[in-house]
Image (cartoon, rainbow, N blue to C red; front, side, top):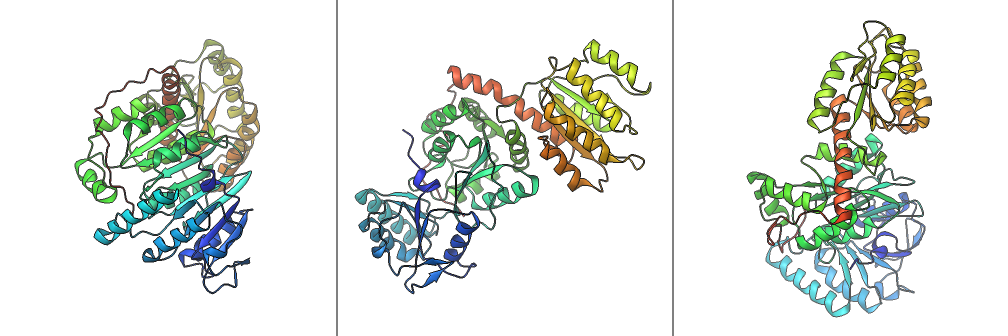
Amino acid sequence: MIRDLSPFFAPRSIAIVGAGERATSSGGAVMQMLQRAAYGGRVVPVNPKGGTIFGYEAVTGIGVIDPPVDLAVIVIRPDAILDAVAECADRGIRNLLVLPGGFAEAGPAGVARNTALLKLAADRGLTIAGPNCAGIVHLDPAWRFAATFLRALPPGAEANGLAFISQSGALAEEFVDKANARSLPLTSVVSVGNAMHLGVADYLAWLGERPEIGAALLYVESIEDHERFRAVARKVAAAKPVVALFGGRTAVGGRAASAHTGAIANDDAAIEAFCASCGIVRVTSLRRLLVAAKAFGRYPQGLGKRALILSNSGGPGVICADRAALEGLELDALPKAMADVLRQQLPAEASVANPIDLLADAREDRFGMTFDAAMNHAAADYDMVLMIHVVPFMVDAGPVIAKLAALAPGARLPLMHSMMGTLPGKAEWFAAMERAGVPMFNDVEEMAEAAGLLALYPALREAARNGTLRDTLPSGVFHDRKRQEA
């Protein structure tokens, strides 16, 4: 069963228990982020002093909230949380997001508090997200929401947004920062925390069915029920990509993960097999997870393996070809019709092969002619075009970018583009290509990695749909009962 998590991602009313005016306090930070997200629902700050907080009329206690809200966000000291949760239950508030720590991760006193909160929730029919988490952000264009003390909001997206579900609040913060820096269409961010009731599988199951989400990205150290997680991942992967970074794949990292989330150590081969059995595109570094975000943010259904490299420089073309081959891409020879056109139109020194080398002095006319030749004579032979643009001192890159950006929307093949070297107009050039729908990369190897990750997904999707993914692991793998977050 999929839990209905709409009260946690799209509540129509919310109470902030512990709200304050000071933005550097937890309660003030949550209030500030709600406003920055342009949340359009009813907001009830709860503070014993009452008054006005961030423009909203505060109430002095939970018991006077009228009518009850869809979600209560708890941002008070740990020793007061049990009483606050009981008051929420008395007031008919059934969904709670508890941000502070001080529970299972906090020694004997925290364990006792955790046990008492679990019992209270069971007795009163409550659902608790967290505790010990950084909150939830969901920037659905139809209903924007953020209950978090992360420092910034992600960019969001009009469609096919990315969701990031993390067992590390610090990595959630980092992902938001990189999403803003790299124009990643990150829409939803979840800091899982101790996962008292809602774990990675619960969030993945709900977000996986959301039409505004095109791909799900995970940072995972421990899984409570690997069979359920696998069933959820397979269902989601049959429709949209699930990309995961599993922490703790080495002996040293495993010990660190055990201290962080209570994870049981797993070797790299076991993690690889588990991901394959789930239909997950696995990455092994945060850098690769961010590359995957760039790739699937633009092409959420993945791409085929046949790549054409179009370059104006030999060396970058060579290392791009090397990386593409290592990623499992196929660099087939140019079809005859395209090769004939290029031999007629390009300088004799140019390389009419795959990679194509237009030479360093290529301007917009040469780039444009080659682009057209690829679309007119090779669209059936390749699944993508990886473009490389080095900018020597004697060539003005602006007209080249303008030409490619004008041609890109009508392209018959998916495009990616990388620029290398000294780029005085980098921000403007990258923005122009991104506006034209072309993912931009700082180097050719990262672009080839992105293409390789995209090429992994179609086979996983078909296997998930056809029920041919293999159950290869013993029932105990990844099982643990202690989850916490720092």
